Image (cartoon, rainbow, N blue to C red; front, top):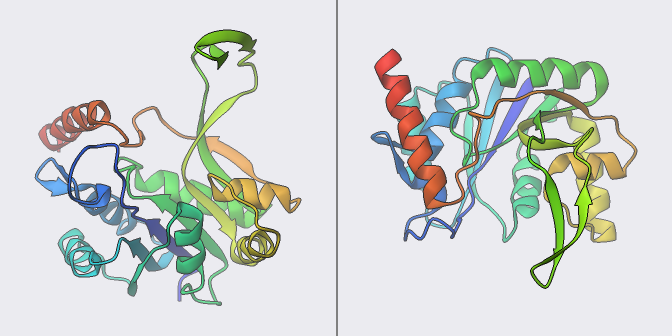
Length: 230
């Protein structure tokens, strides 16, 4: 097989206020999951895909993969209660022959194929890589709605996905997290806590995560502009 596997984590999501899981929320005539799978079809290094979905979403995920033209082997599995659980479940289904595993949130529909490729190459060289952008806003720490500190933003970056890691490092990190009951909001943190090196590659503000209805409205504009330019 080709050198890399991808896990697309499609969680249930609740903040959009819709009855359908976030990954299946309509966007530009498709759904969020479709866009991530479509990008994967253009990344030659990726040889298999694992999609984790809420219970009952397996058939729709397979249908979206077909619509996206995904031609590599695909496994669809019910995810866990938290994102970390879903990635661990998906990781167990990736091929042991894969050198690198990429993890991507289905709620980020606009990650371009080139970004996946750069993360894979960087992870192959250094062990781990994440897409990220510099923090642009002033950060405030609050307590009881009152500012108690201003956080200097110098050197701070906002993590995105895709994130890519050598498979052996990511497996070891998740195994240790399970044993020691670590909880993390992304896989990079788990690898970092195990002493692994994770490099940052330049992401993009357009690689936004769809969390709120306002995000979805912005995404609709981006999808409309992309279809017009295409």
